[in-house]
Image (tube, rainbow, N blue to C red):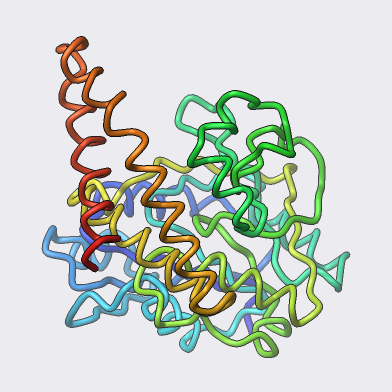
Length: 309
């Protein structure tokens, strides 16, 4: 048995994937590790590049895009580590990250999942801890109250943007770009729910860890860089819609049909209220029209989906 199994799901993110693998060469010092790449039928040459440059890495090539949850489960089935790290392809693992997380888990047996401090490329904080979604915190986001009161926990959205992410803390949800999971906890909680094609599986899995009695812990003494949008940049509006679909499925699964309907109404309100200001920005800020146009298309797509899914 290895100390840690690192699983990376990739879809047409060749450059980011190779950078991620390069960053892993100097991690887990003093511990044994195995790495699996689960490729979701990439067409950008990712599998060939991995096989050529990293022959020691286990390469699993799916014949079609099976989604994030199912692909990770395939990697988990192949793994044998005491701990399993699920790492996004657009993550750069900084020195000391893996070994610090393993040491923390070894010393805290009630922790079922731990996540590092996530940084942007410029080394600023990327908030990665969240509250479970509620009608209230989603309504705060829809009405922009989280923007009006950015330091308030009461008016916060799901992301804990009001918090500095600077101390060890038990949290509801950790961002799915980097998880370390205890195998013992995984065996009790179960694999990722494959009904979530992409997005939403992080909320669902973290809720199930809590329900099974395991702690989910944020550990800032380990750090990684998350580039973001490695795969979603290929079709940003479509990926955003997938996020909304995943959230609706989460609400249906954990709060029933009534919860799903209320959440859908809040999403409709959120995007409807943004149409006028986005339209005005498009008229009066011509230098930013590309970005504004994307936001307009995104909001219209979400409204159409809510009205006629």
